[in-house]
Length: 310
Image 1 (cartoon, one colour):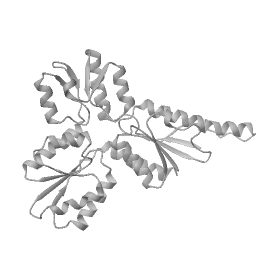
Image 2: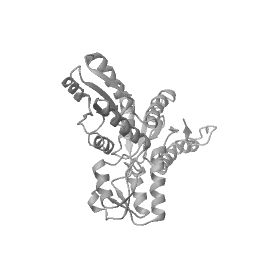
Image 3: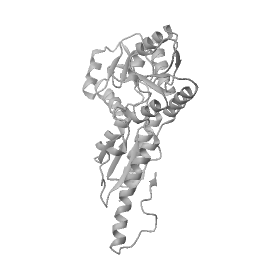
Image 4: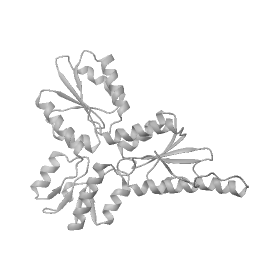
């Protein structure tokens, strides 16, 4: 059994920036309110609560003149205006990449484009994006919905942008279908996918092939879109995969002697969560070599349970 960990695990730069801003606020003033989950990871949110953060879901629960930290996915325009009306001090942790999409969407709208968004209409990033444009954009989450594009005429200008964590391979499949099925449309596709989530997905695919991985353990929040994309990508490649948020969810005795296991994580996963999972797998790996030693078998030259990086 061998365990490999991806190079890019733990918080991405955008999430790290959001947490640094949040922790800085908590060190200066209390109470600090958080409007929803800063990121989609319960362990990360728990860290903030342990530092004194108060998580609320309703803006009405935030007292006037208080301090609030917004989520990294973006803040809906109407909520921002409501908080400002109550003279609430806002610390905006919106990921810079998310802000770029908001600005691009507004510019495209001014140029007369009808907007199409690839993503989930329930995701806070998409909801925030929709709040900054005046038109009713078409949001497409599933392949079965792509046929709605037929409702547009060739005279209408269409612009496609994506939720930053939308899977690259699905976006490419969408682009290919446009070329084949919707040739009559006046449509332009913009690339607004997050480079960090793309690199993690690409690393996953390349690592599976390079190291002949037969099992993947994905670590991250169960409501995290980019973590879900990693899990689904591994499954599409036919690799046995499990998705855990905490080390306790990883079964005792997981992994067989001949397994080659890759550990990956979503961008909002704390590094310690990944380390806990890797340590548990490492202990399992070491147990096989201890059995070999007891049977008089030869040891391998490198350390038992060594964690390989890719």
